[in-house]
Amino acid sequence: MPIDAAKALAAEPRTGEINWERRDVLLYHLGIGAGRPATDPDELRYTLETRLHVLPSFATVAGAGSPGVISGLAMPGIDVDLARVLHGGQSLTLHRPIPTGGTATATGRIAAVYDKGKAAVLVMRTEVADADGRLWTNDAQIFVRGEGGWGGDRGPSTRAEPPTGEPDRTVERPVREDQALLYRLSGDYNPLHADPDFAKRAGFDRPILHGLCTYGITLKAVVDTLLAGDVGRVRSYTTRFAGVVYPGETLRIRMWRGDGQVRVAVSAVEREDAPVLADTIVEHF
Image (cartoon, rainbow, N blue to C red; front, side, top):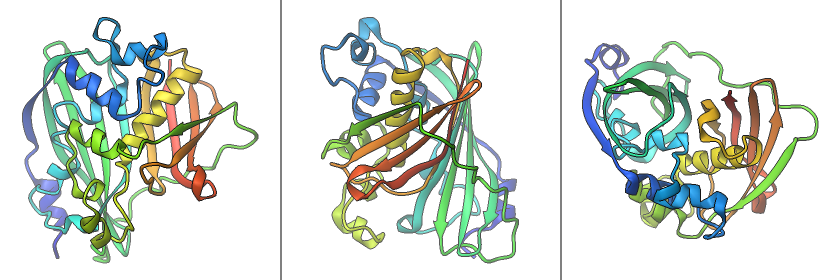
């Protein structure tokens, strides 16, 4: 079996130093669509170094996103075809605001392996800390088609009851034709997002947008719309990737206020509101 769950779970964590600077933060923000309009004072907080704050989802690419989804596939006990891999979900917990530049230690391990029958799900956990203590914890759920069925633990259900009633806010965010090409410069060079031939081998008509790009676009919309633009209010952010986005499409982002949280649903406008992100929650102060 290409996935040896026991071996993967028993493997020693991988630890390495990561570094980032203002240029990396600025590039990430541009990669998720910041800077439109370019002279908008609210956008300059994402695009001008003298006013810069860091959107918390930057944690998914800090230090070129390593260790992360791709590195998780190189862990002991894991031997799978990249064309069968999809990013199933992402959870991020912030322990304090992310600085605009820094050096930290990232420790990554396979935290869980679940048997979903026709697929396997790997949970790649990354803990990041600097000299002042913990910064963030990332959990990436990696969905590997055709690798389940060995009788292992199915794992917890990530499905939540959908929000009820009309959303408190709805915004639309256009995705540029070259959005994936720009976003990949932050470190995720999976050819699924750039190479038409590879995308077809993976079962798609053309390259798809990175799920984590949609993840970042959505968090920015929530922060700008319901959290008064204050990135420091975000405590945690979790989502399930329910469908793909093609560059050039428009995202419809619906938001429901709750007690200390915002529930979110994201769909693709041009495909009759096909679901893109589901079970999405931003917890905040």
